[in-house]
Length: 216
Image (cartoon, rainbow, N blue to C red):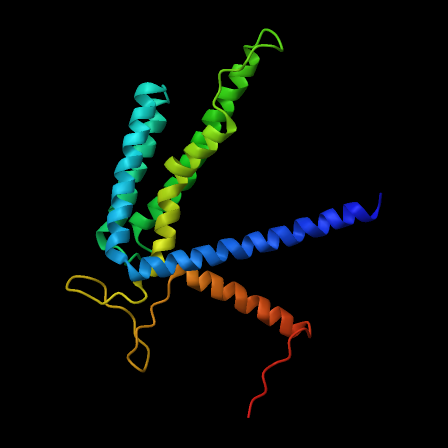
């Protein structure tokens, strides 16, 4: 068969493009929701941080997850909690924000290595092919990473766009303004999406797929 594999490759590329557009649209919509409901978003994120700290503590007490990694995860979420003190105004050069970015990668690396090592040890102790390894399933590991490792950093990343239309208050950052006096603070998600779309448009124009706009 020659044509069917090509159709499969084409479908995979189209599916990846549609999935990327769906994720970008979802992030854009979430950023709009955070802009409109900043107080609710801050309260929800704060409660989520405490809930995840409780989940990690229970996992250590009941399921026997490593104490050091649990302390690392709990400490990381307390650092994430520090970003809420000026929410939704988050400076990209803030040491607390930079520490949060580093801790996300550190948590992912050590937890991934822990589950990988546990899987190797479990398979090495099997005496026959009929024995069942005592390891978490893929769904359990993926859920742990999604909830306990990536949920709060991802939510904080989306919430960076909440500062677009928030009115300044006493003791908060003053939003930047353009020459007309309008608030022009741009969110992180919107900046990335608009930058990608503008880049695609520029490539299309250079390739001749899109004609430049006529100027009078």
